[in-house]
Amino acid sequence: MPYGFTLPTTSALSFVGYFESNSHPSLIPVATVHREVLRALLKKHKRLPLSSQASNLTAVISAILNYLPYLFALDAGLSGKSVSDEEIDVVLLKDIEVEWRPCLASCVVGREAARVCGKGLDYEICFVLTTLAYAYTLMARVQLHTLYGVSVPTPEQRTVAITNAKNHLLEANSLHTYSASKANEFTAPPAAVDICSFTQSGLASLAISEATLLVVLKDDLYPALVAQDRNSNDRDWMIKAPEIPKVRVGLFTKFSLAAGEHAGVAHAQLTSSKSARGNVAVDDSLIKYVDDLRKTARAKACRFFGIEAELSGKTGEAIAWLDAGKKELGFKMNEEGSKTKVLAKFKKDWAERKEDRKIVKGADWGSDAGRFEEGRVIEMLDKKWNKENDLISLERIPPSDPLRATLSSGRNIHTPKTYIPPSLDADTLARMRGAPESGDEATTLVGDSDDSEDENPHGGAVPGAFPAAFGSSVM
Image 1: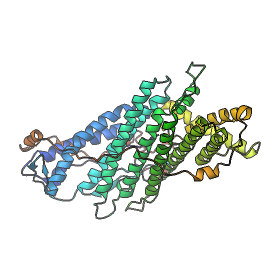
Image 2: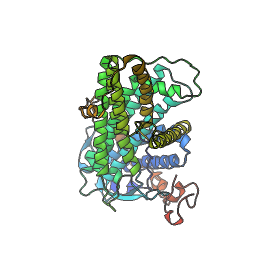
Image 3: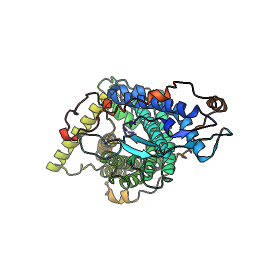
Image 4: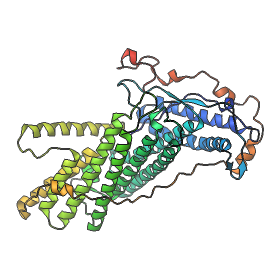
């Protein structure tokens, strides 16, 4: 957690052939230059090894933030709107045609989706904003990966990392929400599934769900305890059990249920999203991740209900809530002595070790949305409370299904902020009134042939792919 998006790439595009401005002649070539910088960075990002891509995210975000004011200035000029109280005259010579490679489209294993051509400036705006939202989500992943590093972070470092990650996700939420409203203005469904209104709405719900769970994670010390316990480099032989005030336990329960509700909404929206071309659906890996996130959030709520019951001296009910959490996660652990239980435990342990190796490598980790981590926390508490109940409390453990049926609605903690498109300041607009310099880079940077093939560093067929499947690059 959060989901590991892939940044899209795009074809070359010169606005000079599509727009004309008598009031601000330099606006169009300068916007072209900024777009070319972004295109080159996205292509560079794709060529980098997975371990080096995190350090390149800041440059990608900076390039997008530099490009967006010029892009929205063109949009304002076409719409007859003012920018910084100044009118911009932009004339459309012909419809823009630009290609972006969708990252969420389902495709054959061993190859990536081909670039999809779209028309209109709104197509460009939506893809640029979506790329920025992906980058913010990946920045959140970079922050959270420090919690699972070789060295155990201090409480202060943990708080800073989680807070920064939460803020990045809230930025992504506002961008996806704005893109969803922009996509609703299309006269026909877009050709790429990434920028469909249902997809963008689902991604907005996903981001707010992940941000809500991070509020819980900031003060929920049990996952940190489990991570520290399995860290082979940790030398603390005695770990004190965390203590959470009863009042905060109730809040965490409500927040976790709210996160599960947002994830459920995201799942419904993403599964119903289809593109206009070929009826392409969202990739199954994202659908599965969102479903796992919903299960994890509801399991957390069950665990907090159990902690609240244990604090009240109701050990039997607490254990029943843990059983409810296991069922929410989809783990079968109640068939004592059966072959099914042994096989299920072996399969689960293997999947957990596989996820641990991903965390160590720093690539493709968190694809289970924290499901196995929550299962480890529940297992730890289950062993502890069952031992106490067998030796001291001797309480009857009630069935868990009636408890699951009592799960109520959650409580939202975040108020999604509205994305405000950036605009050029008065000084920049004044400079745009001048004529572009002769031999402007904008006419030469994008004059080169479209080097889509260069995105594949191997320069040939992708290793492991079918020969007929090679049509575009795979990272």
